[in-house]
Length: 272
Image 1 (cartoon, rainbow, N blue to C red):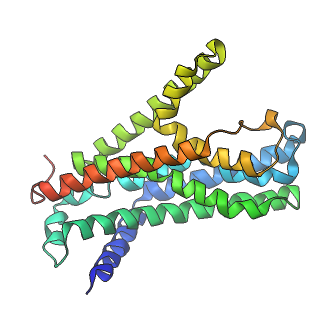
Image 2: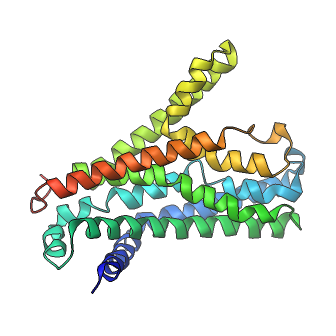
């Protein structure tokens, strides 16, 4: 087999491993239920939402700030570490495959599964919007918005993937990544309030460095830039290019750290 074939084998293996996790499927079902509930509630209380012809945007983004990040953390958290915990890393790496190929297959396998989940949630949001609110406008922006969601999810997926390799313990990797997500969200909200009260740009600049700012806000910025929505019903537009650069920088750093750890460490050791 060539390089691509070997990576493809690991990708398929990663899909089977992740789908076998019941809590991953449970979270996906919960995210779909939340998305459906959001649309249903909007249809029952039309006074709350006036721009019914773009409700699909809110349906697509409803799971972006929480559920997609959680699914990314759950999939990536056990990607590398579970092989050490079970002792299967020895078996997998005893095959004619390089460590970087192995890691690439694990990363691409987990992330492609995450993309599938994001596609299901996004399409569901659009379908439900049509079903409850009728024809929608600006649907030509949907592909760009979906790409933004996928791109933004690189950040917390790669963060958790890195911890999965560093700690080699699934639970620890997930908890640390989840802790960073929660702390970053809380601190970001606090800094935004301080900026609103004091008008000090320093607080705004610091908040932009937090991982949640770019990971969560980038799709929203895209929607605000390309779709006309009343400002009182949507977050104001932001710096799309800066958010995209921050996601890229975080992702590159996390992948490099994980690669260095895998290449330089003794993979025959199980997690202690």
